[in-house]
Amino acid sequence: QRGKSTYEIFAPAMHAAVVDRMELEGDLRRAVADDCAEMRVHYQPIVELADGKVAGLEALVRWQHPRRGLVQPTVFIPAAESTGLIVPLGRWVLREACAQAARWQAARHAADPLAPPLTITVNLSARQLQDPSLADDVRAALDDAGLPPHALVLEITESVIIAEPSAALATLAAVKALGVRLAIDDFGTGYSSLGYLQQFPVDVLKIDKAFVDGVTRGGPRAALTRTIVALGDSLALHCVAEGIEDELQRRHLQALGCGYGQGFLFARPLPADEIEAMICDGVAA
Ligand code: C2E
Ligand code: CA
Ligand code: CA
Ligand code: CA
Image 1 (tube, rainbow, N blue to C red):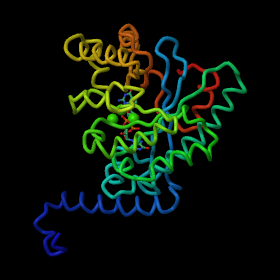
Image 2 (image 1 turned 60 degrees about the horizontal axis):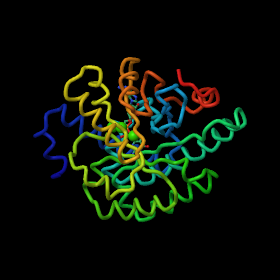
Image 3 (image 1 turned 180 degrees about the vertical axis):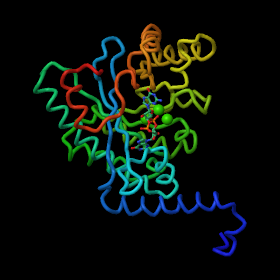
Image 4 (image 1 turned 45 degrees about the horizontal axis):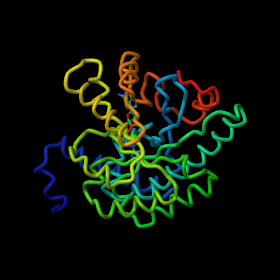
């Protein structure tokens, strides 16, 4: 804060980390200003646990950095959030994902007119919910892509809702009025308040990987997973279990009545061209 002269109070490693972070932010600013040309959207299938059929896809952003290579979102999303760059970046992901979903929907329908419609899931950060033009952006993305609103699912975490309930509620109501569906991401982590579930127009619960990891071991994690699935059931919400890595987990979750799953067992997040075949054949992995 005091400028260059105070740098010597930092350990060299800290100095390097600070410089690295500043450089990343500068690069991110440039990349977003450049119409997100270095950004890529990867897609991970969400499957029906009963038969492995692809029900939808989650859009997950990556950054093809000219020197750093493919940068994962865990590295740059926090910087995008703290700088506000997540608003234009998130808008770009949304538009890209809706356009891609509309193309896949058409290809899937051509291959099998009776195949159920695909859903596309896009993550939203808190900053995007504070943006008064979010609902207009969502509507424009759907219109320009020619994608029906019910094919889009927007994911938010519980922390986003708890942080600013009234602002979030107004924005989410406007988005819901378009016919878009809402999912709670990482459900069961961080906050224990369930009260918001009756206030917020939620359609999908995504059960965090932490529960999925514990489901085959019995004990409290398994008991909580069973309770979350029952809660979803009684509120008529879809449940998607995240981070399923093995067949035993899949079987346990299916036995609990969880309808959908996502994870490396089925497929990793992949570039669009590597997803196409799974969508038209229907079955992942
Ligand atoms: P998330 O929304 O909870 O996404 C799920 C993460 O779990 C993804 O990491 C995915 O690759 C990973 N995953 C899926 N299946 C498995 C599995 O079987 N095992 C393991 N170990 N991991 C699995 P990813 O792609 O690195 O994304 C990390 C986070 O970055 C996301 O967590 C999300 O919070 C954020 N993110 C990604 N794309 C966007 C975006 O476009 N906008 C916003 N706001 N956030 C995004
Ligand atoms: Ca997510
Ligand atoms: Ca998640
Ligand atoms: Ca997460």
